[in-house]
Length: 238
Ligand code: HEC
Ligand code: HEC
Image (cartoon, rainbow, N blue to C red):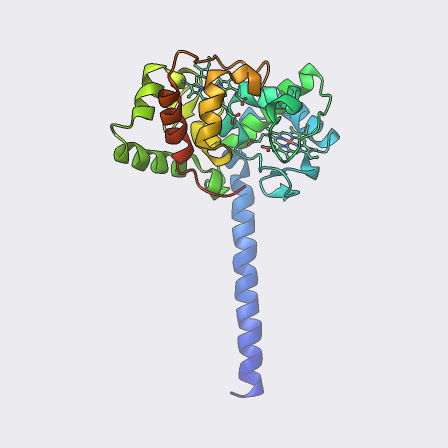
């Protein structure tokens, strides 16, 4: 190869890549409004973002990948926790995370700030970003749960969950309510023993958490629920 050809390859390759990069950047920017549902960007969402900045939540958390890596990414926090659960974590993290090894400080947020931040996280969770981050993907949860349910069609734990209507508040796979944390997300942080204990007396573990007690369930039933939930193969990650 002569020096001239090498230069041609260098300059040709560089300019084609640069043009491609610029064109894709412009194209992405043109789609921003649609991808982010800019029409739903209400004043409350904006206030939520301001409160998020004011309290430096990014010092520990990431949103869309930006921030620090101490605490969970919050891009999909709304889909996996639901409104009430996020509210509870913001109002009294010392109760919500009482037996966690990582600590979220009490931020002394006003009632309005809590509502605004919830609205902000709800809006963020709707952004179409090719289902990122992958470990929090609802689709992956649904797939892993479907596999789990198929394998455990006659699981005694699943039967108790059905009978006690836990999904009126919690969600699992494609079904359930939005009042409490998603079962697959519990699987990531709790073992079956803890869950079995918790069901007997939630107040003991998390005072004021709003979860009903199930003392009428036998130990064996509670253990089977614990095993079922703990085994939900939620994708790994933070
Ligand atoms: C000093 C670090 C720190 C700061 C600042 C902080 N957090 Fe946290 N946060 C944590 C940790 C650690 C956890 C996870 C606790 C656990 O699950 O063990 C957490 C958990 C959460 C969760 C639940 C996430 C999930 O998926 O379980 C939410 C929601 C949340 N924080 C919101 C906020 C908001 C909003 C702010 C700002 C007002 C904030 N955090 C400020 C450390 C922090
Ligand atoms: C009336 C609504 C409601 C019903 C019904 C309900 N839960 Fe809950 N549950 C909650 C709330 C609220 C919390 C606290 C959520 C949070 O962490 O913010 C909770 C928390 C939990 C937790 C602890 C999560 C954690 O990691 O801290 C487990 C485990 C759990 N529920 C399992 C169950 C099971 C199993 C059933 C059915 C037998 C059930 N729940 C029925 C509302 C409910």
